[in-house]
Image (tube, rainbow, N blue to C red; front, side, top):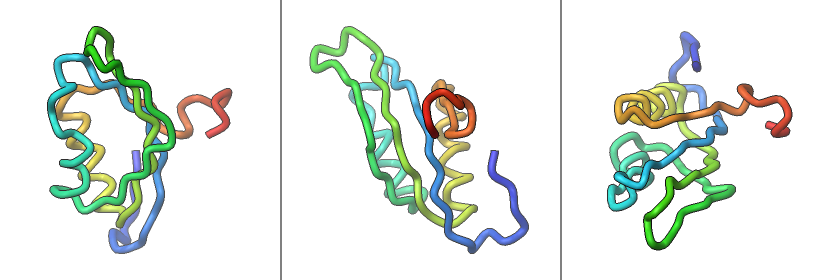
Length: 93
């Protein structure tokens, strides 16, 4: 998790998030932008058009420490599986 005493510092945080098929019609990424003020760059994605499988997104979240922390808390509150850039050393993050 991100921690710092200076919440106004801008950061970039890489994350991989699993989007269950039950959430395919929910505006999760849009909510990250509009509700939490982060800039979201989708670096990779796998999402089935017929919604038979879970989807995966590799995201770069940019914003202040507070904005990024709030966005990560939102994803956690939805009980979405997430991996942070430093969680998988073989992935090259």
